[in-house]
Amino acid sequence: MNNNEKGKLLGAATAVTALTAGGYWIYQEMVGGKRPLPTPQNGSYALITGASSGIGAEFARQLAAAGFNLVLTARRKEKLALLATELQAEFDITTKIIVADLAKSEDVAQLEEKIAELNLAILVNNAGFGTTGGLLTSDLSQQMAMLDVHITAVMRLCRASLPGMTERGGGTIINVSSISAFFPSPGDVNYPASKAYLNVFSQALQAEVLESGIIVQALCPGFTVTEFHDTEIMTEFDREKVPSALWMTAEDVVRTSLQSLNPDRVICIPGRRYQLMVAATKSGPTSLILKIARKFRQRVR
Ligand code: NDP
Image 1 (cartoon, rainbow, N blue to C red):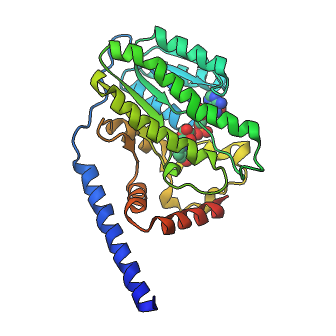
Image 2: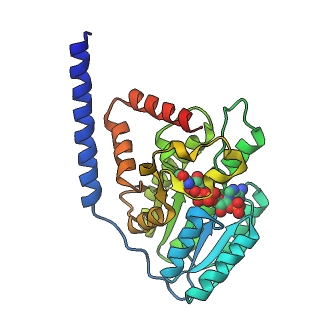
Image 3: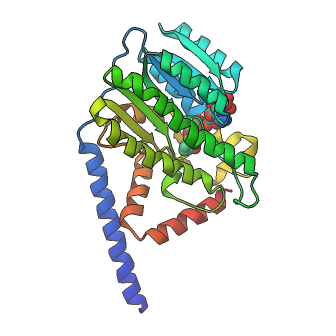
C-alpha cells in the first residue's frame, strides 16, 4: 500500500470513528429509561464501601443530601467517623460505620449479615485500589487482595442484597468500575481485568434482576481527583503527566452516576471525552487505539 492509499484509509477510519462517536453521543443524550434516584423511605439505607475518601465519601455526601441513612464502611475508622459526624450534623439522617477490610472473607461476611438486617435501598460497591508493576514483578498477595476487593467482595455484597431488594420490589446497585476496563494495557494487568469483570457482571446481573425492579449500574470513571493515586503502592504514578482536561472531580462523577440510573444503560461513563474514547474503541481501528492507550499508560507510570 502506498502513502496515498494509507492516507485515504486513515482518513476513512477517522471519519467512521467520528461519525460513530457522534452517534453514540446523541444516543446517550436521547436514550430513555433513566430512573430518578428512589425516594428514601423511613428507615431506608444506602451502604457504601470505600467511604473513607474520594468517590465513596462523595457518594455518602450526595446520598445523605438526598435523605438516605448511611452505612459507611472502609478500613480507616477515624475517617469514617469524621464523615459520619459531619453528615449527621448537616442532614437529618442516621449513620452507622463498619470497619472492614474487603480482602478478608470474614469482614465481607460481617457486611453480608448487616445487609440482611437492613432496609437497604442502595448498595455502592466502590472500594478499590490500583497497583503498579508487571504481573511477574508485582507482589502476589497484593494482586490477590485486589481481586478479592474488586471482584469477590462485590459479587458477595450484590448477592447478599438481592433477597431484601427483591422482597421490597426494587433497589439500586452501583458497582464502581473504571474506564480502564476498556483499555487493557501492561503494568497492573489485574486492575483493568477486574474492572472489565465488573462491567460484564453488572450487565448480566441487570438482565437477571430486571423483573424485580432492581437497577444495576457499572460506573466507569476516568482520572478522578481522589486519594487513589496518593497511596504507597502508586508512588510511580505521576499526576502531572496526565493532561488536566482528563481529570474529573469526584463530585461530577457521582452526580453523573446518580443521574444516569437506567436499566437499559448499565455502563455509565462520566465525561464526554471518556465517552468518545470508548466509542472510538468500538468503531475505530481498535489495535491503534489500544497502542495509544498503552503508550499513554507507560508515560504516566
Ligand atoms: P480513594 O483511594 O480515594 O478511595 C478508595 C477507597 O477504597 C477508600 O475509602 C479505601 O478505604 C477503600 N479501600 C481500599 N482498599 C480496601 C480494602 N481492602 N477494604 C476496604 N476498603 C478498601 O480512591 P477513589 O475514590 O478514586 O476510588 C474509588 C473507586 O473508584 C475504586 O474502585 C477505584 O478503582 C475507582 N476508580 C478511581 C479512579 C480515579 O482516577 N481516582 C478512576 C477509575 C476508577 P480504606 O483505605 O480506609 O480502607
